[in-house]
Length: 146
View (cartoon, rainbow, N blue to C red):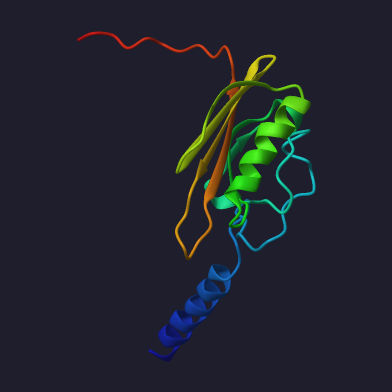
């Protein structure tokens, strides 16, 4: 009986020690990120922080695609102005711009599209910015009629 209690206690200690360590490949939000420049030459507003838990980035460098969620603080107007003025200087062509509670900027560059969505927040939190980059000529299947 005593050996059984010892075994149960030992297993519980091992499991609790494992639970406090991240699973291989898993990164907690407060852990440092790899120093590799995942987004290549893509510029972000000063002070912007990537929200890794809300982002999906495939590839790296100047050919990455995916969605990057950003914390830009409370000044969404400055972030809007940054994208509107800076991206054309980087070779992106502005396709459309909509300003409102949810603002939208759409750019194109070579074989890629970039969509910047800026969503106003409330008094307690700042807004959110989502940058989505995708291939321009992605093969899309037309929906079929049943």
